Amino acid sequence: MQPISSSFIFDSSISFEEKALAVFKFQTENCSVYKEYLRLLKINPYEIKLIEQIPLLPIQFFKTHNIVSNNNSIEKTFTSSATTGSQVSRHFVTDLKLYENSFLKGFQQHYGNINEYCIVALLPNYLERNGSSLVYMVEQMMAQSKHPLNGFFLYDFEALKERLQTLENNKQKTLLIGVTFALIDFAEQFPIPLKNTIIVETGGMKGRKKELLRHEVHTILKDTFQLETIHSEYGMTELLSQAYSKGDGIFECPSWMKIITKDIYDPLQNLPFHQSGQIGVIDLANLNSCSFILTDDMGTLMAENKFTIAGRKDNSDVRGCNLMVQ
Image 1 (cartoon, rainbow, N blue to C red):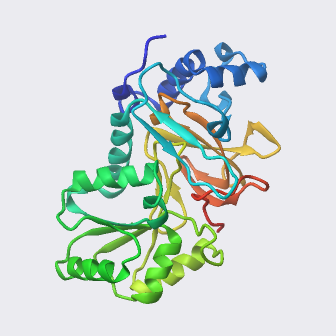
Image 2 (image 1 turned 90 degrees about the vertical axis):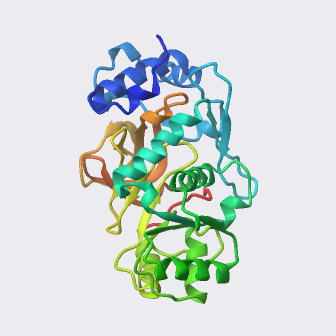
């Protein structure tokens, strides 16, 4: 089968189902790991006619196998953070432009024109290692935004406070994206009102503090910064698309990403709306790796492509991007 162009993935005139089935056919022929997985399941890909029938590859394969669907050169290898002694996931990206299109178009769908925002990032643990897809995403978002006060911050909370106060004084729309433990640390030291700033937490306490429920974190941040809502981002090394929540705990996908919940005891069994299960993702931006992923996250599909996260499956690896339970 001929390669699929990235423009096909984002073409709104083509239905998601048509695109997903085309990508499925392409990857069953070109992704050797996925092809072998289907063979071991005794599933004939030519008998798959509906996206609900598509088997999802367990996310752990990104730790143990090289998952690619073409022979192009690897432009970037993204890696997950890891706890002591654990393996990291590796996502081999052969088309960075496709990833950039995904996160920029996804941002536009949720937040509008990125040129209107100043972007400030508080991502110390991600900045302190190599291979973070989140850092790459934010760097490129800053480059697209072109605001002169865009910037990353490690542990200099005083400088971050001064930057945010300058932006507030200028009534500048600002996006502060941060890992949870750092946002909590910053809130404890500098409780300042933010009227023009959207805070987006990426999850993850990573052993740095007592684990908090998401609503507890959001309550602390809302009270400290005098905000009505705290937003959240759902993303991971193994996916090239992100979902966002604007404060109600319900995440929404971009149009080229679909969430399916699976029975934890039978991962080939789909679950209906409002029933908790294991989160499966179809991410068409993963065109050159594998688009059909069974994650370790538990959650509930509330409506088409709107879902909540309830934590991680028991006995799954604890990773740096681990989301807090509700």
